Length: 472
Ligand SMILES: *Cc1c(COP(=O)(O)O)cnc(C)c1O
Image (cartoon, rainbow, N blue to C red; front, top):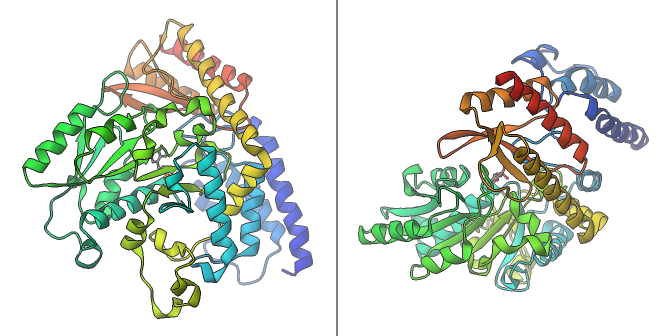
């Protein structure tokens, strides 16, 4: 493809995206295909002869779109929406066009320095403590996902707690313990598995049945008990917005409760953290200045195309101590001078894309005012859903709404709740997901897209009411 052809096909690809968005409202939200349907429409082998690029765009319409669940659909309310935005997409495209590898400062200084500045901006925008900034002992880095960030936090915690032994000798015979509530994201157990501690190293702590937040006294009791039995607490994972119900663990109270042990506090605010761009929605992060690390995903609710997970640590020496390794072929004067950050020491992988461009593009194109308006609109729509739930006797709230997440059920019971949700999902009108809370089924409705309006919420609600009537 010549540069001139690239220009022409590039315009066509952008047109394709704009047309796709324009068509979303009329498409069923959830994919309507059976296993194997997409594969069957594709040839068994790659073409020997070059094909025109237009043929690929045609196959997007013919093969791919019918096999998609439309995450950018205005009535996608399942899981946590992972929204894209025009600014982020263009930023991502520019990053691909530049095609730089930012593994170390020397392989492209701008990749590192723009990322540092953007993360300092973003930390300030979220009201995070100065100790996470790049001009302090801490700093931020963009990870692919919150799962990787949590794994990285655990490796840093092990490095610190083992006095640097873990990176050389492995986890050894110490009986390390990691703590999280019953509502902690599954990536915590996965991190323990990947770190070689095993799933059993994670001690699960009870939650308050009403708020679903970690029971701080139970956490303290568990740590005391473990220490008395000779086990070594290494990290406490806090859910600042749990995946199931948006529950908020009390960061300040937990920090106070485990203060006497040198245990790493990791705050997982993967979904909710970005709401802190609004000063009035920051309370749930009270105490975050005691945290050793913090993660939030602009790729969930802040308009930044997947993947973009922003991760900060208070002591970057623990992080780079755990992960740095310098093969001969990467030796260079800048690294040796100690004046630069080499991000390859901040995450498991070596190579890295210029992901900061898309977050930079989002911050500049929307401005913090625009981002606050986006967050506020999601929260207002969730409050609207909660009012609709309250207005219909067949439904009830399960937990208090948490930011843009509403968790509710049919009073009739679990079977009816799940059947009503499945009826809406199968119809393609909207897409919702479920959870269980205190052993009972519940429907989750998470607002996130910049394209979702009150009319979309009302339409989804009518579909749910019809499904509830059919279940009655
Ligand atoms: C979504 C989510 C995660 C996992 O996010 P990834 O970036 O997909 O790894 C972790 N924790 C919480 C609380 C989440 O909501």
